[in-house]
Amino acid sequence: MAGSLSSPATQSATGSAAGEDLRPTRPVLSWVLRLGGLLARRALLLAVLLATVFAAVELLPGDAANATSERGESATDLAQRRELLGLDRPVLTRFTDWMTGLPVGDLGTSARGESVADLLSRPFPNTLLLGGLALLTTLAVSLALGCWAALKPGGKADRAVSATATGVLALPEFVVAVALVLVFALWTDWLPAVTLTDADGSPASWQMLVLPVLALSIPQIGWNTRIVRAALADEAKAPHVETAVIDGLPRHRVLIHHLLPGATPTIAAGIATSTGMLLGGAVVVETIFNYPGIGSVLAGAVADRDSPVVAGVVAVTGAVITGVLLLADVVRAWASGGRI
Image 1 (cartoon, rainbow, N blue to C red):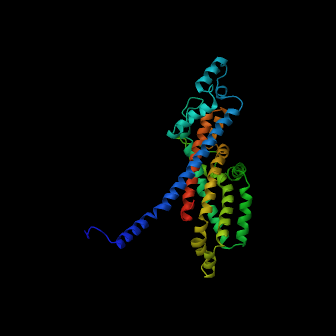
Image 2: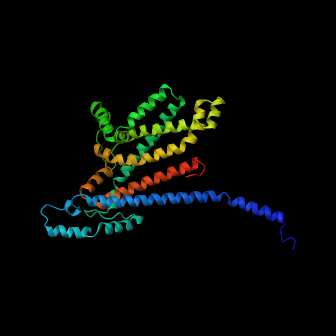
Image 3: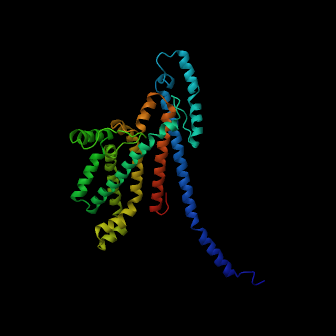
């Protein structure tokens, strides 16, 4: 009997150990729930944006039947086309039907009878390539410039970087693109001004990516350099950083081991915000460089008053931006000890 029962001290120790085993799971569960709630709010925001897109296209003069009609079609033909496209139904009904297919990847059918998912499957990877390269360029250059300026606060490099970043971030992408074409394509003939494609629709050469990537990333480099510099300046006021400086640690060690870890959440948030700006600016840059991305598809869809295509572009772009923002939230939570 005595062997089958444990003493109160043993039960207390066992209960304490069990409590210790359960305690680490509570912050993780809380963090997952907060992350799930954040994702749900962003999904709701995307749904509201898609509804706004449908309504905005509906408010444009004309409709998809008129925009895609052939010359000489009669009023009866147009009426049949409107019925075929579902334009005789309320816009809310059409939007609801379109949204029901979104969770399974069904983006509907364009006004010209082509699957929207197939229509976007060819140019969207090119836009992702362009935006991804621009994002990596932005991250690398802004980190390098911000850290260089932070090594000697108030010095010549710091003032030069801050002034240049302020001037650059005010430049629109199309102004940067035109300037790059003028200098590197027309004056020096170093890089091509237009993008030629292979048989699969991708850029024929890596050189054709250089100018579009620079046109997209230069304004964002200015923006993120300011963010990196400000985040490092705020972190420099922390007590542990001041202690490291007083202890005589080299500047580069203070930067890498004390400043950057604390500034990571702010830097990650700035880079994630740039994702939407890069994908939005890609539409303009693709048009200037004749780049085979979703810019031309979106322009054609607006001209055709094609709500499913416009909403499909917004949906896939919004999904990418949401994914990057979620990744930034994970980085921020990791850097700040699990707080979102």
